[in-house]
Every structure is written in structure tokens, then in C-alpha cells.
Amino acid sequence: MNYKVLYRKYRPNTFENIIGQDYIITTLKNSIINQSIAHAYIFSGPRGTGKTSTAKVFAKAINCLNNDTGSPCGNCEFCKNFSENPDIIEIDAASNNGVDEIRNLIDNIKLTPSNGKFKVYIIDEVHMLTTSAFNALLLTLEEPPKHVVFILATTNIESVPITILSRCQRFDFQKIKIKDIVNCLEKICKEENIHYEDGVLEEIAYLSEGGMRDALSLLDQLSKNTDNISLELVENQIKIVSQSTIEELFQNIESNDIDNVIKEIDNFRNNAINYKYLVKKIIEYLSKKIIYVKKNIEVKRLSYLDYKNIIIELADTLNKININVDAYTILEIILLNYIDVKRSDNKKTITTPAKLQEKEEKNNINIDNPKEMELKDYNNLIDIRINNCFVNATKNDLENLKSLITNFLSSSYIDGKIKSILLDATLVTASPFIGVFCVEDNYASKIANNLVDLLENEFKNFNKNDIKFIFASKDKWEVEKQKYIENLKNNVKYTYIKEEFNNSDEILNDVFDITKVEII
Image (cartoon, rainbow, N blue to C red):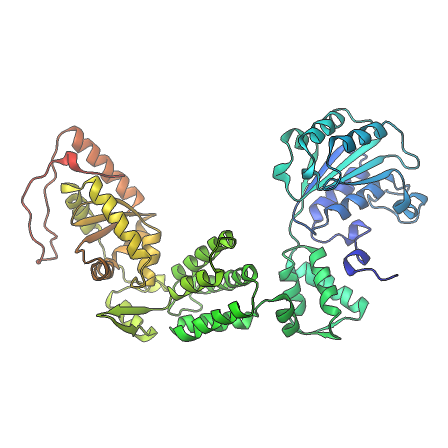
């Protein structure tokens, strides 16, 4: 049988054919030109990025009789007979990982090369060697013969002992860029007379996750089923979704169309769509949307913080795919949280984008358009509420409020913007009446405090607790905390201060012991 699969047929045999590793190739060629060949190299990186191919080309180049440019000439006797050369020894550590195999290797390295200048040992998946095998290899790496070059390749550099790494020149291979994979696939399709629809090669490149070998295997597999590879074939055979499907899903989320969102997720589940690929596709789509929102190019109901939190929550699910929970149920829970459905008196109402805009205008804030915000000055209120919280804050109050906030965050009542703010804030102290949050900086404090009335109302509706909140920047909180410590040392007591602009607040004249205060 003469047929060769594409990844074998188009395996690089020159440095020029190795894609996406320009820095590594340039360094290796320069070492050949300058005749500064090291005795040991280690190539690490994801699968299919060219580690073993580079090792073979490098082995050919250092023994080439005409390597003035750093590349193998392909015409000399050594280059022509490279595949049958006994001086190039390949070892698969996955199946030859014992100490006996390494000892046999050590016994043979003493023999001088039969044909070339160097005897080259290429050990693939070197991380699979046993501890005893690594120890035996270490002795050889410390004092190798001048005619021997070791090239170790691995997809798991963390499992290689540091004693081995310290004796090798290390090169980290990167995932190949999608555009580079597409360019290579275009050339191969032309050569092989493979026809395809627009967008097919991009999908194959995306599915390959930066590995050229995987891309060629997918192309080979798909080309066997049809004379013309379509996007529909890719989706059905590899179980993926198109960009337009992702866009439609988020259009339904934007418009609060809960029925169609659930229907779409059910379709993913029933069609056994690759969940890992689906989540990555959604994250890639949202990463573009989040830039549009940040640049004010496209502003809709969902905010920058909404998109950011969806990305974080979805990325977290990739680490939980193997748990005994339906992955699509997790996806459904995450996405439905961003549909603006409010419950009041057991009746379900949907907040439309128009209503949301009206609500934002009422609160004088539009998080999606930072440049257009009219942020109120809450500096005076921050001082007052921190002081009033210090009057009778306790550790129990802090822990109880933390628990209530956690339940609040997991509820369906919470507004998306409020949730985003709370996720980025830290509750630092609390009393029966007030909770103080710490946020990154003054700007974040202004944004959060402009929504504090909405937070208090939603929190009261959910928990039936009438608690006031305030957000202080990290710098502000550090100042107040240090002031508290000094007051504690000097036995200075805090008293309740009236919120000047709010006549409905009660004035509490009682004096409380400062030593009760609990802060973090």
C-alpha cells in the first residue's frame, strides 16, 4: 500500500518547512553555522508543534557535508541516506522507559559514528522514563563523548527532573498560529486537489488547538467523505457549532429570550456537541465583544463586567468537565443568570433593554459607557458609613453578612451589574446595620456607590434584611483601618453620625465600645 496519511506525507524535512517556530529554527541554524553544537537539547511544547520533526532536521543538518547556511543541503551522501543512517537513533520513551534500555544506550554511545560527524539520540516523550532510567541517563549527560548529541522531546516538561533540564539547552515550542496553519492547509489542499467551502480551514485550524499534525489528520479524515468539504460536514462529524450559532445564542440572551436560550442549549446536548470546544468558542466570541464594549463601539444590555464574568465562569467549568454533573446543565445555569428576569410577589416579569435603560438613567449611571457616567461624589458618605459601622461591628456580623451575600449572589434575583460589582469587592467589616466593601480603586468605588441604592433594595427584597452598604477603595480602607488601630490604642470611642442628606435616618446617640469592632 503506497498511500501515506497527510501528516506523514507532509512532515517537514527542512528547517524552512517547519511552521511557527522561527526563533528556535534561527537559533539552531546559527549554532550550526558557528559550530557551537551543544551535547544535549530538550524540546518541550504541545503535541504536533514540530518537536520531533525539528529534532530530525537538526540531526540531519549537523551531519550534512554542506551545511554552510545552517540547513541540510539534501544532496550530499549523508542527507540522501538519512532515513537509513545507523548514527541517528530514535527512542520512544513511552514504550522503552526502563533502566535497561538506557543502559543499552549508554553502552552503545562509546562507539564512534559510522558515517557522519555526530551520533544523535532522539528520545521522544522523555518524561515517561522511570526514575532509575533518568538517573542512568543523568550520568551520561554529565560527561558525554564529543561525538554524541542528545535531543530530548516532551509534552510534559514539568515531569522531567531538574537535574536533567539543567544539563540541556531548552527550547519551548509554541502552539502554531491559526493563520499559519490555514496557510499551510491551503497549500496542501491545492497540492492534493482537495476542495472546501469558505471558513472550513479556519474551523480545522481552530479545532487543532495549535497542532499542525492534528490539523492535517482532520483534513485527511474529512476529505475522505466528500469531494467538497463543507462547514456542515465539519460541524456534524466533529460535533462543533458555527460562529453564527454562538452569535444567535447571545442575541437571545441580550433580548431576554429565555425559551430560545434553553432550546439552543438542549440542541447542544442532544447533538452531543463537543462541550470543551463549545466553551472555548463562546469565550473567543465574548473576548471580541468585550473589546467592542470597552471601546464603546457596541453597547447593548450586557455590560463589560457581564461579559467578563461569563468568561471567568465558563473557563472555570473546563476544569470540571469530568465531575458527575451534566456539563450542559452548568452552561445553562451560567447563561440564564444573565437573562434579566425579576421575581416579585411570585410573578415573573422581564426587564426589557428599554426598562433597563430607564433604570440606569434613574441611577445616573451607565456602566457600558464609562465616558458618559455622571458619578455622584460619595466621599462624605463613605466616611460616615465606615464610622457608623465601627460603632458596633462584630466578627459574627461579618460572618453572617458574608453568608447572606453568598446566597444573594447565587440567586436569580440579583441584577447582573450588582453581581459583577460584588464579585470584584471584598466585605471587610460589618455591623447589624452596615456592611463595608473594599474595591480596587477610587473609580471602582464611585461606580459601585452609584449603584448602592439598587443593591440595598435588591438585597432587602431577597434577604428581608435592611442593611446599608458602602464601597471604599483599597487605599481609603487602609487609611481608615490604621485610624481605627490608633483609636483602639488610645481608647477613643466611635459614636453614630447622622447621614446629612438623608433626613429619614435615625440619630443614634449611644456610645459603643470600640473593642467590639471586627475588621479584616
